Image (cartoon, rainbow, N blue to C red; front, side, top):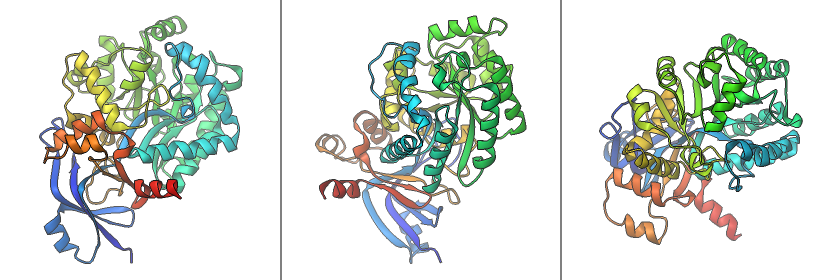
Length: 439
């Protein structure tokens, strides 16, 4: 019989989908979370839950907070090594840094080494699920799935497809993109906690022939994910117009190949037309708001107010390595600043919702991740808000849940992650990392 574990801490999560995160969040100051095996059994106040599960092993984390594992909706595993590289705007940055680094993923040993570092960085920052761009190499994608699968980590990824406007050493073909993506779907999609995403890098690097080949797979496998980039940079938007003169706009390029639908996530979306905003809403597609990369590459400011007006799912993405860190709380902090410049007050609970339950709902994964409801996978983070002198000063009083989330979004980093649990197993421990470093 599996041993039940009870975690005593402050509990914060969104039990269901909502358009009002501020008022529909569940906060339990003296809370309890009970797990058995890979799943959550119960969430509630400590007194009543402990009475019901009196034989469970108690882990006393009073003074700490338990939240659902974070969901990063847009990032690049091959760009881990090149995070923080100085360089111009999007197209030049891709040419100078991204493509040369991704060439290394033809080496399986290198790909496995980076996959392990990449997933460890996610866990160290409390991220337990990611929508991840792999490289163009099928084997590198296999390796990333394999390493995540060993941890029973929920992962959405796919091999990048690009058959033009990229270096020859990264170029595939329409036929190879179709064949290799199909093989990866058959091997991984829906197996364990693995999900496949058809991944054209962005419209300029895929020919009509390749987009058509991916459209065939999208029709054949209607529950696979789709991920790509959309309207990140003004120069990029103009380039798309020149490459696809018969399309009505950037989004229409994807739409002509039936790639705009539920479970399709489009990174950035900074320069959408009115028609594109409306089409995104109609298709129930998702936008991944990536504030740190948008600022780092000078791409523009996301219009959160318009997205809310159109009732489009908006999630958060670090966009590593254009993004400048793996920490989702800090990513919300940067999103808050972007929204301030656009006169939209992005409230702390709205930010937390976008990286937990809101993302799970957008990606149709809410029965498995994004909340602390009984029956979902035991993916959660134990946060230590008072992790240094400054946070002990700032958070030394009994602050509200909203104030805690906001302060951490400005002050926290991976030091605030005390533990990260995936499917009921502790996969990161700050205490163990410290002990290992001192050994």
